[in-house]
Amino acid sequence: MGTPKNSTDEINSNRNENLGQLEEEGDDEDSLSLDLDDIVHDDLIGDLLIRLLSSPLISDPYWSKPPTSTLKNIEPPAYLNFRITYEEIVHLCSMAAKSFLEQPALIRIQKDDLPLHIVADLHGNIAQVLRVFKYCGIPQKDSFLFLGDYVDRGVQGIEVITLLFCLKIRYPYQVYLLRGNHEDANTTLNYGFFDECITRWPSNGRNPKGGERVWRHFLEAFNCMPVAAIIAGKIYCAHGGISPFIEKLEDINKIKRPSVVPAYGISCDLLWSDPSPQRDGWVLSHRGISFLFGPKAVEEFCQKHNIELILRGHQINNEMYKSGYRFHFNGRLVTLFSAPNYMNYKNNSCVITVNKQLELKFTVFRCRYYQMGKKKKAAKEKKKPTNGSGSVDDDADGSHCSSPQHSSADVSSGVEKSKKYKGEGGESAAPNAISPDVRYTEKETSYKSMKASKFPSKSQSRRNEFVQWAKMRDKRTPRLSPLRNPAEKTKH
Image 1 (tube, helix red, strand yellow):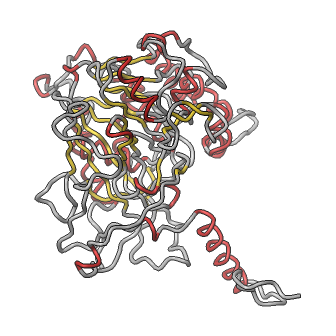
Image 2 (tube, helix red, strand yellow):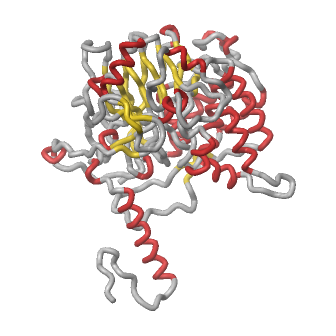
Image 3 (cartoon, helix red, strand yellow):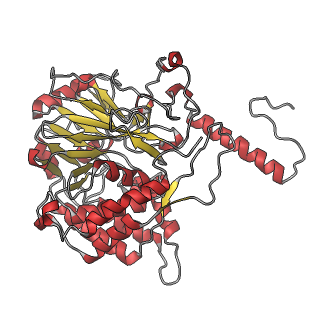
């Protein structure tokens, strides 16, 4: 089988157009859709943007195909070859914090600012960020709303947050960044971002604290980020969800910034709460923080604040592996996930575009960390997978992703999935789970949507990796006794 489309080399070459537009934006005023007064010019930020967009994506030279894998033509993860100094991070975080505080905690995006691209959890997947800009456009022409969780679990959280901070500073009214539960000191200490900073900036005689100082500068910017957004007065967006303590939407603007994420309250709930179809109202969350809310709580919130739709990130479950999104509660709430190959689950990801008619277009990016063989018989393709409903925490380590399903004519890339949403009882009611019209068309292509039932569990994957690692070690170092099969019982 040949290499799939949109490989690392193609991604690098296709970014030249965006880079050229960025460099020439001051020369061709007619080509821009935004006022030049809305562009913040800073030499260091501009230099960082140029370096980020021109740095090549490279494959890990030490990566090798997992010994347990039966998949064909697996491609190595891609990394951005980018370097940034401590002094540049200090300036970047200071400018980002200032930009965040100039806008309220509840961002209001008007109809004139549409269309708007909504991106959820990214988790250090810089290749996916670049791919989103490649297919959805760049901030000179379109607006973007990011729902949080930019760092942790991924290998390049620093590159992701640096690029998004630069875009936020340069285009403050085109790029909006909301805070996620991973933009917090306690979470980043445990899920990878702190370790990433320590590894990139080790301690030495001149800088005894090293990466800890870098981490603290990012935290200062995180503490200033807004926590929610309203699109055209009808679509409510937050990382986690809603809160029982919100009497009116302006209560969100009363959140003091800069501030850490508290253990309870509005700020905590907007970042940590989750929907639960088994619950009707509000119950304490299994996470040990915030609440679970049911359909009744969502309906009351929407009617009380004249909201038609709630968009959130924060979660991925089995039913989202194919599409990257899921409708809840008769279409009142949508969960979105934008990091492909989350913790090696080989899930697809999604970006939502809202147009001026408040219609939603779902662009699905296929995970291409693996490549399947030839497609099977049509009868087998028609079988629907039986998916569980268990949710998985929202910590991701993204990898490659193929072309998004953006054109019905390009059947090798998939089918564009567009859905009109016009409120309750509107033109096309949103489904309760995956829409029946979300389907994958294949024609002369090696890609195939993997059934969720074939996805190995987290514990099974780790056990298999350990067993294979032990076998490889056994070949290098002779042992007194052969490695036992973990499935066999130990004999005494």
